[in-house]
Image 1 (cartoon, rainbow, N blue to C red):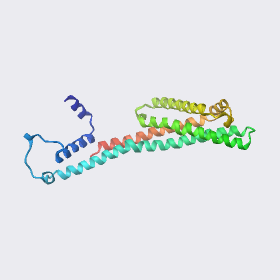
Image 2: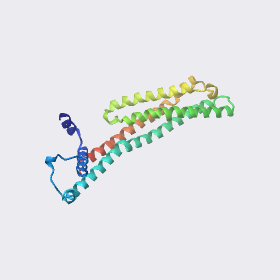
Image 3: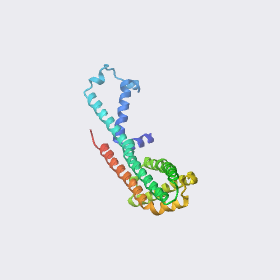
Image 4: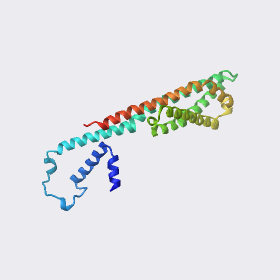
Length: 232
């Protein structure tokens, strides 16, 4: 009995109404049996003829619509908006890294044919590292969506930690799949160039991406709380 009391206390207003609606439908359709000692003979139209039936049905429809809207905001809309910004950011990062590689390539005495092959190989490598591998990590972090639970200082530390993990992921992918003969640029020289020429441009973009995700989460959490507190 204690566990049912605890569940009741923790349930939201919307959840309690939904449970009540399910029980009501169960009684009406005979899925849930009423004890024999409590049964009262009534006509088949007893529920329809009840003066409160249609008000109750309308209330429950409104509750279900509210529950669906809350679920949509929490499970779909929030992440959709956050990931749209992630798509933009990862593409911008790829562009920065490709431009850096092309700049290094332009300073070599390679033939144009070799440069074209190098650009193609690096484009494929860096897109896989950033848009596939790093982006997958970010999607996992966003799905957990604990951004609004952190203080501003905790959030700054969190973002710095994630930036480090993103760099580690991209660096590992590049290192493991680097085609030395095709890309021509020594990997050590490329890494040094990324640190010197790209980090200052990439880091603010990643910071903005996480800040945006936090703002989106906060915006929809407020909308959800308003829905949960309002009566239809």
